[in-house]
Length: 365
Ligand code: 13P
Ligand code: 13P
Ligand code: MG
Ligand code: MG
Image (cartoon, rainbow, N blue to C red; front, side):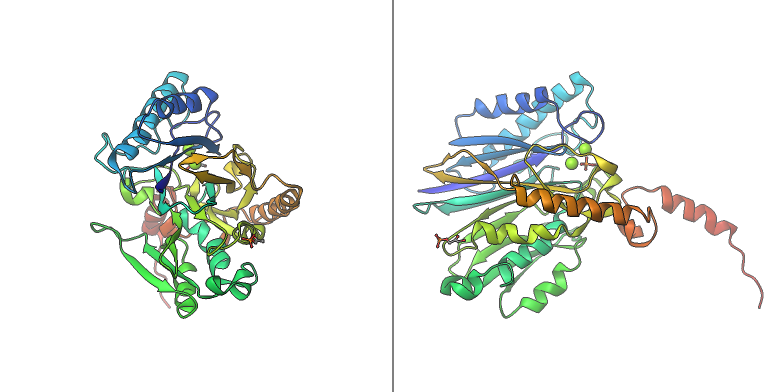
């Protein structure tokens, strides 16, 4: 049976700043999705201040009525957020009306259409207070590095490598600017691009037999709206096992808690902390967080989810991530603790520098 899993995420308002949506808000979104007859199943999660709608259906990727359902649910949620006086009500809904595809109007979208395998396990990742480039390192390692993906040396099908579709997220023309690169031949070319996490992001990964196993939201909100409206907190769907990496291989690189862009005001650098699903945000509007759930889908019906970072091992990683957050926060806004001028999400410093430039004098030699 050919089915599609669609994950669509948006920040439409939160309690006490950019921390967490209210129960009423999550319920309002859920009520709209529940009533739909075009989907086969759904689940709702939240991570930090973002709500994710996970749906299964038989309509294919980019199907307007599926995207409209998410749009309508987020619109209804925004009404509730306004009624409750939540912060940032409707924050990620950047267009006034729905125009056929929710991509490019604010919410983050990840979708995969596939012929269901007899067992169809997959993972959904949801990150807050960071950007799509935060996934460059973990998914590069999970699909291309035998230190994390032991299947690359143990399993012949996996040894063939994968095809990465990488997007230039700074491209402002019509459509998407992408490049297709294959491992192992292109591994250094892939590394060259993915190191620039602000500009390049993995949007899809395919097995050599042509099966899509990763879909990642690569929207950049400030390229849509022109100004800062919040970070582009990214989601990802990953099919696992058999010809694809094992679940544990995909999770392995998240133990690095690597430093990513985001944190307070989307303008700093902090470690990506793997957290339990539905965890709010805290210290310095962070640290940047990622949650993950593992499920199986059969005939379009989801099993219950396993919270992949809810395990004693990840408590130890969280402690290490907290220590890394402390370390970088010690240097406040100096050097690599704050993002470069091009990536700052506020105009304050630019305006100040323009004013100060007038006060500089040229001293004669
Ligand atoms: P299989 O059961 O598909 O061989 O999976 C192996 C595995 O995931 C061990 O980590
Ligand atoms: P969000 O993108 O999660 O709304 O966070 C915005 C922010 O500025 C936090 O400090
Ligand atoms: Mg917010
Ligand atoms: Mg957010």
